[in-house]
Image (cartoon, rainbow, N blue to C red):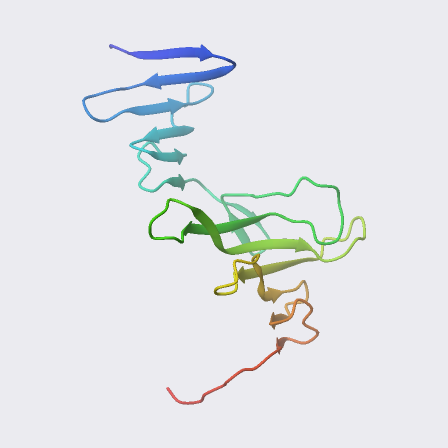
Length: 171
């Protein structure tokens, strides 16, 4: 069995290169003899897979917590307080003649209260307002009681819409 690779340290960085076969380079990192823990393949990163087909692919048996099933956990490490929580933002280029990137939308969670030991949380979905360049703001909120708010961050009933709305019964 032939193996090839390089481990290099430079100014406190560690570079590991391995598996160059023609035009395909793969990097496998693992522990305890498991070589598929993290895989880099043609610009894609895989966790739990040796052939990632997207920029980030996570594969494995999900963890369950009540009705929730998840493979990725995103946490906020700031001190416990009302309004803290993890999130994801989505973005891309917004100027034709530039590589400038910006955030367009996000999904995030917030602790609903400042009480220690109280698990109540909210889920927020938000976007940037068109043309303003301002920050992402909450468009839709689901609170710990299952109340849904559109245009409000504090729904006090099962479904609350704040602002102009149109409900059409036609198909």
